[in-house]
Image (cartoon, rainbow, N blue to C red; front, side, top):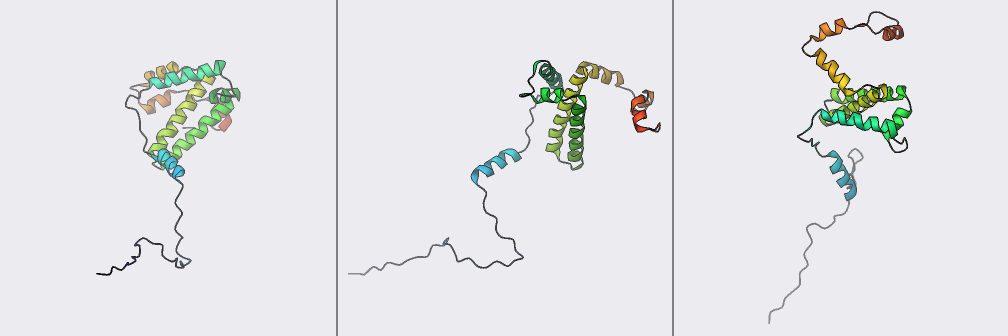
Amino acid sequence: MAKTTKTTKKKVGAKAAKLPVPANIPAKKARLPKAVRRAEAAHLKPLELPEDGDAAVLDRLWATIESRRLVGDAATSHSARLIARGTQKVAQKLGEEAVELVIEAVARNRPATISESADVLYHLMLLLVDAGITPGEVWAELRRREGLSGIAEKASRPRPKALLAIAQTTKLP
């Protein structure tokens, strides 16, 4: 009769004893929890834009903001809350969003530039509602300027007296 002997094999993936790591080498980072990885993956996925985007969305946005101005609750509507805080706050928010847009554009961050552009358009519509200006009035002004040289059109505009008084100069371009 042949004797069989049991042999023990070492597992290839078994934990090895930890060796000391030199101070100038960064320690291995711990793996993030699955929920965090999923949330980051969803947040960082490429921007997917609908194919049927058009400028009519601005008219709908203006109408929504106007309805919030008329009957909106400042406790539940961001638009109503900003309008309730006054024109200066509405204008300040538009300026802040414009600066954020410029920063992302200069950084050549395309998805963030698109996102910040949407923020600027929203806050512009908010400012128009606050000022009692309809998008149709702005579109009419754009149609009036169509085909004109930008330099000639700008030269034909009257200089804004209020701006000149605030700036205390007549040397504005």
